[in-house]
Image 1 (cartoon, helix red, strand yellow):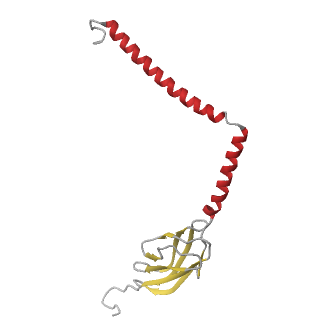
Image 2 (cartoon, helix red, strand yellow; image 1 turned 45 degrees about the vertical axis):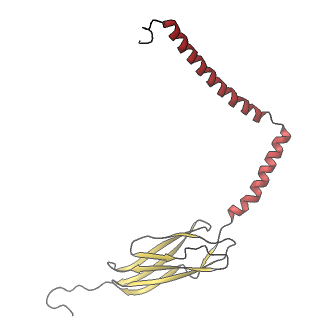
Image 3 (cartoon, helix red, strand yellow; image 1 turned 135 degrees about the vertical axis):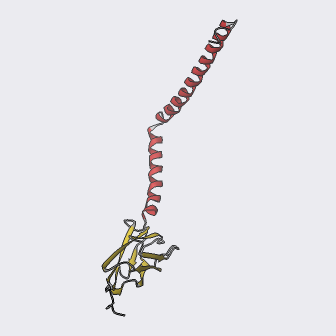
Length: 183
């Protein structure tokens, strides 16, 4: 409203019209630039397209095998049984492994399924042919009966993970109440 109540309405209208025209020209110029660049792509000769495709295939062929190579992990055992243990006892076991692949083995994480199991593992890359270890510790506090504790090892191996298992039978402590309990 303010613009049209001005003493020079024709000057204001021509200013707005000029602005709209400049905006339209700018938009069309951008579209023309995109259209001309896409035209350039579509006007390449078949011979040029073939050579580009061949170059791309050569690059893909030389990099794909390197990306596809994975380490291979071999454990001395995948499961350890602690047998019968007392409630509240803390037991440890070291799983030893060897990298039998062609690239360095990198263990990114070792994930137990519960808080009663803790881990310590080789954190540096293990070169082909070398060995490492994963130490698992199981705290039987608050546990009783048969225990089965899977642990997932995340590494640059086929499938991305390997599973280790700890088992034990935790003897429950008898609870005798009253004046005749054993001491």
